[in-house]
Length: 181
Image (cartoon, rainbow, N blue to C red; front, side):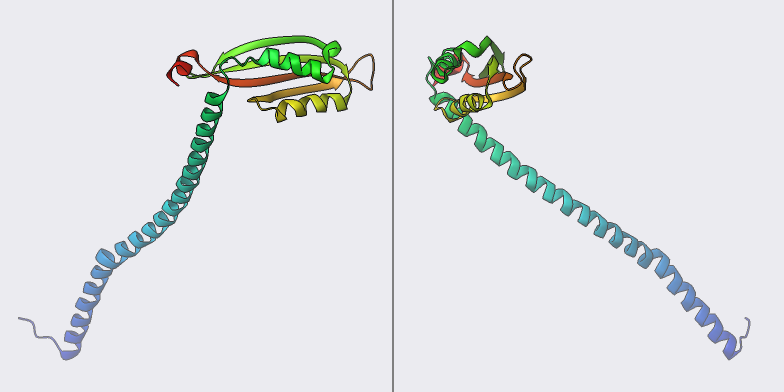
């Protein structure tokens, strides 16, 4: 066996301790630090995703409640209500009968439970005040009729007058849903 001097024994012991410490660092500490950094990054990402899920959940609850309210309003609407005759009477009430060019009715099936009735009203040569009055009466009426779209342009013959196309919509329960109520 080789005899080593005291200094060589200390150097060999120090080398063994250094190699053991280095092995422990590379095998245990370094991967653990990398894993902790990864987990910290993932935790912050997951917190952001959780906040998004909470926001979407609040939006879902709001929309669900709004849908329930809409369903209640639509279900409480008279079964015999028709949008076109209502608009005709409103136009007569506002004194716009001479300004009506056309009125078209269209029914869109939203899903198996609901349909949307859209009436397109083309008005020609009317003042802004009368148009606003007509729209205000639609919005403030007790029926579930709302303005879906509005297109306004100047009248070609009289620059002080307006031509407009208004789409007014109303949602109704399909006949099979009304029977269930």
